[in-house]
Image (cartoon, rainbow over all chains, first blue to last red; front, side, top):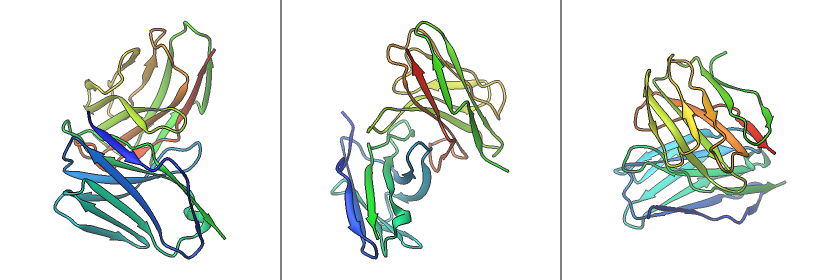
Amino acid sequence: SQKIEQNSEALNIQEGKTATLTCNYTNYSPAYLQWYRQDPGRGPVFLLLIRENEKEKRKERLKVTFDTTLKQSLFHITASQPADSATYLCAPNNAGNMLTFGGGTRLMVKP
Amino acid sequence: DGGITQSPKYLFRKEGQNVTLSCEQNLNHDAMYWYRQDPGQGLRLIYYSQIVNDFQKGDIAEGYSVSREKKESFPLTVTSAQKNPTAFYLCASGTGVDGREQYFGPGTRLTVT
């Protein structure tokens, strides 16, 4: 069955460091993959979309990579700030062109 | 002020009652979606609609029903047949019919006792 794995343990880093979050998927080949940010008690907010033919995508301090051979996407936040603390969800599209969301990784940036 | 609105923010119901959650968008998006989120888990797709008067079941449609009579509105009814209705419900809309770049509402937290 299709499966998306994100580290369920919180990632704690110091302000100014680079945060790296991992998303692994199995048993399907998404045409694209999205990353969303979710704050407690709120709806997710779209951050970035990367297509299968793109290796890397950047937006300000955010960088996403997409390795279709490893079936993995990495999400990086450089020069992290306490305001970046949130849960980050990855969402590859599936065969029906709908999204499947991972459980998310909680990021805590300490000042 | 453009966006997606969901109401109410918190909803309490007794077991055995049907309840309807509201979702409205003024983004002129064709596609709309309903998700359910349980504590510590990802979003699971309940229903989606790519055009007015048409909708499709998602992964966990049993015990739920929807309608799409207007482009702006996509209400979700949680019926008494839904075995575990207590959850955080999120509505989203998007321009593409393939699920990309979705805009989410603030969510409705439903508690059924």
